[in-house]
Amino acid sequence: MKNNIFLIGTHWGDEGKGKVVDVLSENAKACVRFQGGHNAGHTLVINDKKFILHLIPSGILRNNVKSVIGNGVVVSLDALITEIIELEENGISLSNKLFISESCHLILPTHIALDQARERRLGKKSIGTTGRGIGPSYEDKISRKGIRLLDLKNESIFLKKLDSLMEYHNFILENYFETKCIDTNSVARELLEKYHKISKYIIDTNEYINDLCKQGGVVFEGAQGTMLDVDHGTYPYVTSSNTTLSGVVSGTGANMSLIKYGLGITKAYSTRVGHGPFPSELNNDIGNKIGKIGGEIGATTGRTRRCGWLDLKVLKKSIRLNNLSGIALTKIDVLDNFDEISICVDYGSINYETFEVENLKFIKLPGWNESTVGITKYDDLPKNAKAYIETIENLADTSVDIISTGPARSEIIQKINIFDA
Ligand code: GDP
Ligand code: IMO
Ligand code: MG
Image 1 (cartoon, rainbow, N blue to C red):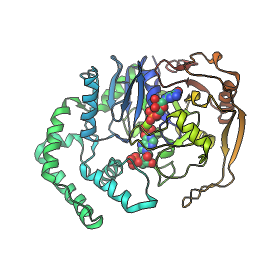
Image 2: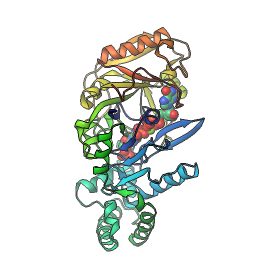
Image 3: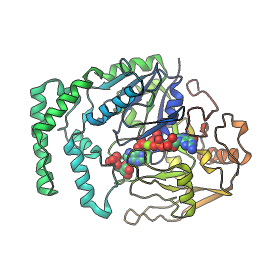
Image 4: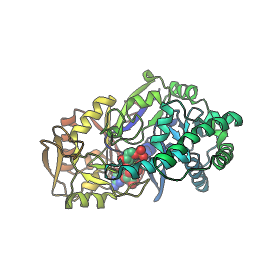
């Protein structure tokens, strides 16, 4: 039986998860999202065409792969329908391919308004959220007043829940944030209309996912990254879900004993979008050069991503926290034209007021000044590129099993088949 695999971003998101999931999907049976929402932006490049997926798993472009949105994901019906339409317009059929958990919590327009109002109020201390209502939706889930997809099945129950929740939201919007209320009746009408368009995809995913796992070849696709985890990340500059291993279990109900391989997705350098500490950040020409070559512009919000050298301390933490079996190192090609490449190997405590860090330590390695773009065999990599990869393996005590050498599907080195590992 093929391994079931979970895949998690090791840093602050945007490590290239979508690209790697798309590659792995060639040999997968199913692909499952377990947390986050449409704050995610996963980019796939197929025959020069770019697809950015926010909610639907990145296996969707493969004909024989089932795509499952697990119970841990928060769903905006607007975002979901927009994405479904975009895929259908590109000739991708979703029937009998897309399955959404009836336990997913909804993102309401008031969640979005609250997210944005709170960010405005925080001013310089804002989190830099994607403004998509993710935090407020998870808050309502945890405080047991959220609305789930299954609530929409029964119109009168749904209307009662929506009324009471939006009354509360509107009270805060009006009286605390001194901003406009949102009309409950029109939200109710729109949600019911949209629900009827997608209700055919809704099932009890827990049983389905466990059945798929028994057959093997399931890829659990993380969103965001380890340092954005609400418990283990750079709190409060995090997202509102468990982006780490525990999210796989709570966000799907999968039996962990059936999942044999954990793949960390690590970019060859580090980036962060949004505010918060970023110890290895390069506020200089080198950082700008990395960002420019790497095209480091947010796939969801279009914001410029902050760039820095690879943060190895974070990588080690991520390997430990997620019990990772190996790493996919992405965007190695972005470092092709540097005389010297550094790795941030350690630092002391982080000051969460100033984001300053004590005792930053780096090691320097020679660059390779040769193109790695599109290389598919490890032995074909330049000597210094191999030395860079092997240094990461040694320092982090891990194995780099996959290396991505460009945005396209074919630009990949798979040292081993992780479905058999
Ligand atoms: P995700 O959120 O982790 O799926 O990552 P994003 O899609 O937000 O950002 C990764 C970006 O890097 C996208 O534009 C990808 O097309 C691109 N990308 C992925 N892998 C590679 C690679 O190996 N080399 C280069 N140059 N770009 C890559
Ligand atoms: P993918 O899956 C990078 C960041 C936001 C902000 C913080 C909280 O594409 O890697 P939120 O809207 O979630 O409440 O914002 O988290 N963030 C991401 N950064 N990649 C993502 O997703 C992100 N999703 C959220 O920028 O700092
Ligand atoms: Mg992204």
